[in-house]
Image 1 (cartoon, rainbow, N blue to C red):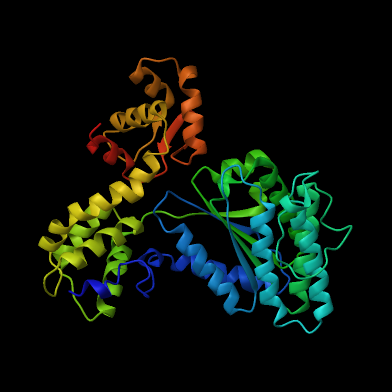
Image 2 (cartoon, rainbow, N blue to C red; image 1 turned 45 degrees about the vertical axis):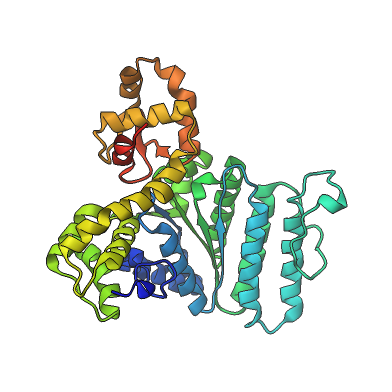
Length: 397
C-alpha cells in the first residue's frame, strides 16, 4: 500500500469518512434551505454530540451546500471567554461577499458593509486608544445609528435583519455556522437567541446552524426560555455498523484497493463506530498493510500506532489542560465506569474520593467549562470524549 496516497490521511483529497451515515442530516438541511429561500418559516438547526462524531466536518458540508445554492455563508468557531463580535463580523463579511457577486446594486451592498463595520468596531473596549482598536478590514466607512449601540442583543438583531434583507434582494439567504457553540459567553448566547427569534417572526432568510457538545440545548434553554422553539435539535452519534463499513470501504475502493470482512470487523471493534477513530485506525492499517487487501492482521499490527497517536493528539492534548485536582476527578469517573462511555453520579464521585460533593464542585465546573465533561442530566456527569475513560485507566501515572 502506498502511504503517500493514504485515503484516510487528513488532506488526502477524498470525502472525509466522518460524513458517512449523515445522509439524513444533509437531506434535512436541503429542506431548510429550500423553505427559507421561499420565505417560509423554518427553525435554525443545532447539532449536538460527543467529540469525534464529525460535527465540524458536517458543518463544512452544510456550508458548501448553502454556497452551491447561491447563499451567503460564514463560519464561526466559538472560544471560551472570547467576544463574539470579531469572529461573527468576519463570518458575515464573507457571507456578504458571497451575496455581492449576485447583487446588482453596489451601493446597497456597501451600506450593509458599513453597518457590519460599525458592529465590528464595537468589539474594542470603551476608551481604547486608536492604535489598540481592532480594524475589521472592511473597505467602506462605518455607518452610524444601526447595530452600533454596544448592546450585543440590540445590535445583533439589527445586523441579522439587515444582512437577511440583502440576501432577500437576490432571492437567496444567509447561513451562519457556529462550531463549539456551547463556548459562547452567556450574553452572546442570549443575543443570538433573541436575533433568531426576531428572524423567525419576520420570516427573514437567515438561518443559524450551531454545533456543540450534548449539553448545548441546556445552555440555550438557560439563556432564553423560548429557545426550544427556535432550534431544531439533531443528535449526532456514532455510526451504525453498515455506515462504519461504508466509511472504510468508500475511500479504499476509490484507491482501487480492497479490505477483508475480518479487517472490517476489527476496525469496527477498535473504533466503536466513531468517525474520528475510524479515520485514525483506518490510516494506520493502510500504512501497515504490505499488500492488497488489508487484512485483520494488518489492523492488529497497526492498532498500537493508532493508539499512540490518539493518546497524544486526541486524548493527551485534552488531559494536559486539566489541573491535578481535575485529573483526580476524571480518573475517579473512569474507575467508576470501568473505562466505559457511561455517565456517573456526582455523589458517587465524591464518595469514591472520600470527599464532600461541595468540595468537588469547582473541579467539576471547570471541567465542564473546558469541555472535558458534560452534565448528561441533573446529578450526572459524563466524558465528552469517547473512550476517554479507557485512555485514563490505561495511562501510567
